[in-house]
Amino acid sequence: MGVIYLDHLSGTPLHPRVKEAMINHINTVYGNPVSDHQVGQQAAQALDTARSQVAALINADPGEIVFESGGTESVNHAVKGVAIGMREKGNHIITTNIEHKSVLNSLRTLRLLDYTVTSLDVDSQGLVDPAAVEAAITPGTILISIMLANNEIGTLEPIAEIAKIAQKHKVVCHSDAVDAVGVIPVDIKSLGVDLLSMAANQFYGPPGVGALYVRKGTRVWPLLDGGMQENKRRAGTENLIGIVGMGVAAAVAKEEMPGRLPLIKALRDKLRDGLVARIPDIIINGHPTQCLPHLVSASVKYVEGESLMLMLDEEGIAVATRSACASGSLRASHVLISTGMDFATAQGTLLFSLGRDTTEADVNRVLEVMPPIVQTLRDMSPIYKKEHTA
Amino acid sequence: MYSQIVMDHFKNPRNVGEIPDADGIGEVGNPVCGDMMNVYIKVSGDKIADIKFKTFGCGAAIAVSSMLTELAKGKTLAEAMNITNKDVAEALGGLPQNKLHCSNLGADALHSAIKNYMDRKSGKIKDTAKDREEHVKSREAQACYCPYCSKKVEEESPFCIFCGTEIPHEHDH
Image (cartoon, one colour):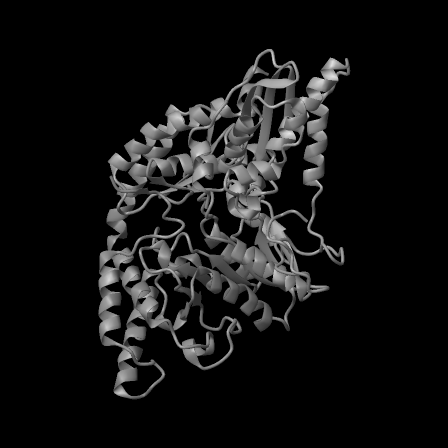
């Protein structure tokens, strides 16, 4: 029996059509898009095609797409690029407490350079209040950076509303949409943000390639200095093999999304409801309806997430955990703590992210395997006994 | 990530459970920092006749608990007091660097159980709950300071921006 892969937020397998396009590209194209000869122009053509494909996925103009080395670079470019590009206007940035580390640590760097940051709280479902965003704006505010979909609890933030507020106050608005683009419909025109980050490996494209949407006129300075590539916004010879893969992945996502969404939602609901029905003392994180369609974020009380993850792995089920023990930093998830969860419960958090290959049999298998694993670990847990006899 | 011995002890942990009429109980860690370990001992003469554990924690913490009970069972109290966290880690064929500090609590729990036994024998009643609270506090008080120049640095800094000292990856500064 093969592995049941339920960790699509960490990365998706290549779509067969993406793989085919990348192999075909490797076999036929080798030039540099900046070269004016025919070999170079063949590469330039491939780059243009990919740019149009990615633009179409989010209803942008191709000229507004800057290719990057992934979601992290895209976010770094947006945040630091605006900080530098808007330096004359001010030094204040607004964000939330539940952003991805690429945002948080970009802001850490900017604090060293005397920028100031207001980081907003979220409610227990992970939602930020647009009124709080507006209240935080000062004359020196240059950027609002708030994620579209949270990568640990799946909550979708009210970005359209926040972008309107930003526009009203003439503040640049960036959204880290890495976990949303290619998964749910994202239309840049109705969203209204100035900058949007995305990554190919969230929608069956290769890792190591992403893009930043830059609305025309947005003052975002390059992060990498050098040549004139990417409309002078991102120097360096393009990772064209990856970019071609991202382009095809974007085209496939646009095409297949209407078919994918209802199926994946139904499986997600079955998994979520099944876990709640079969396992006592389990908490489903995030907003019940305003959320990613392919994620179940569940906190299992009295046990620790890495142990759960390892035991599921032994059964051939690959999931992610947000326990501090598995994070490398040995700290509980800043996202879950921000929603008001206690540390001990946050330790028992698992993320199940479904994909286009996930089947009902996969979900049934998880629902069959998981309850006895939880019970085994609870029987071993000193806090299970304590809380139950208390 | 983990050695085969660790995975074996994680998947088939030895001596899981409680001893209802234990002669000594040791509690270390807390769920806040990820791991909590309870060790129960039954003493006969000067030997550990029986030992059991209950652990909330990652794969390493469970394997450490299991190995600890195997190392301690049948030992005299004096021998058991000489078992170190390092001994447990070595018996497991090593642990990942970032687990050495947080999950390697087995010997501490055992020593605490033996002390509890001694205290009971000498008539001193020990408030184990209070001990644990103090442990929680000391963990939570940790902020990020440069280990060399002691200035406060940003979380997860690769090095100290003031003096350039590399800051260790694991959160033990």
